[in-house]
Image 1 (cartoon, rainbow, N blue to C red):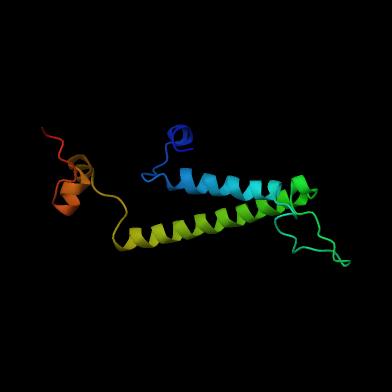
Image 2: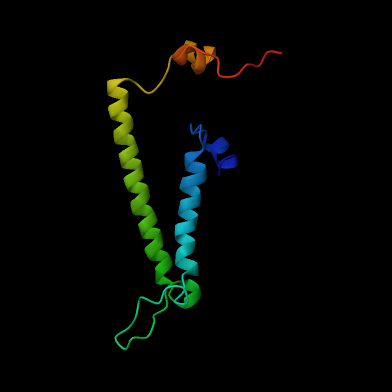
Length: 120
């Protein structure tokens, strides 16, 4: 996700937050629906007190769908919240620097110091 997908779609994610946390969290959440077992968590029980199957490998394929729905809700909240925050910040102070500042380097143009000494 960090290298191939980011290059293909060309989105700006300097810290690779989406590639690491977004993709990893999504995969982990869905795979929880696959590998959840009653041997680890037997809290879900039927009327007779018998532990019910939790995930796909335990005999409950519906849990994968439940996890996917949870992921979709999380993505929706994250996207809406991010867009709202970006819009507010853009209206107040802006989210982009000028091309000159970018070429000069943000360490010098924004902070007045050199972040990397690449000379000798």
